[in-house]
Length: 392
Ligand SMILES: Cc1ncc(COP(=O)(O)O)c(C=O)c1O
Image (cartoon, rainbow, N blue to C red):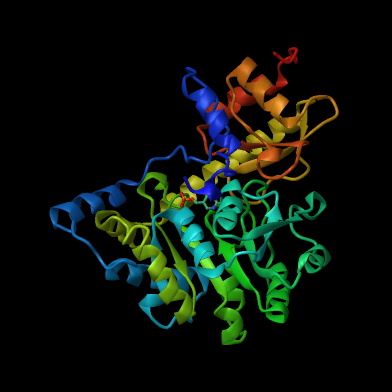
């Protein structure tokens, strides 16, 4: 067996999910799975692709119609309008594969990557699997889960290779401002760092505008722009989690050439019919995105008020994006975050994720509100119910 895998652990989210799998009528607030189904026109495009015999190997980094649709989308929607060719777009098997291949492409053993703390567990492990070291810099609750620039500056060492950003952020729902991004670009320029921008929740943002850092860098030098890798996915925007479709953009030819090697020797290209479905997602009606987002917003408000009306949990400000609420555990709970998660499973069949899964945060718990609204209503009733003793 590969020795590097010995210390890799399954995420605590998996442990919670496994316990709830066999429970009838469980309240599934642990998972980031949209309750919506993929819109019909996207599914029809897949069926048509099969009928048209788009069932063969395609180019390893993506079929031309999809790359062309992505080029238009990132240029018009994200403002990344300086990619000078389709080879700067690499189609991947979901956002996770985009991030995994990116880390493998840019990191050497011992390289440090600054990550938000708390951080989505998967990227932490991807960095470690690529030989890198994740250096957490705390997102400050008092800054609505944004970085304090001074904290960031003091985390940079001669070994720092990259900074990972994820806006909107899993698990806190924090959103970076355009000014945050400009300041980050100054740092990256000064220290010659890569920026890996995980934009999985680009469309799930409530009251602000989503900025892509690659677009904020538009007027910077080629050297700076060439070190920005933007990772996107169809999973959340189009309720396409099972399709495993994502992509990266980066203006560097060197990055594109090396990413291509990663794609070739991991999957040799994403399922061709899925890619045609991706074309329909990008070129078809976009109203589903906004309908889903408006529903998430209502669920967020419901959960935010509900959480704050309990005596166990507190959340200062409503999350600004993604579909997670990161609640602080009050002093009315004497146990650990895991104790609370287990208590909610044991007594109410309710899933959640303890803060220490995302870093060593013993005083927080994450709820996802991607689930049906009815589950959130039941969750709130459970949280408000009189506290039972913690079961052994
Ligand atoms: C922060 C973040 N990035 C990326 C992803 C990747 O999603 P997928 O691999 O389904 O595209 C997820 C999924 O939950 C996520 O939470």
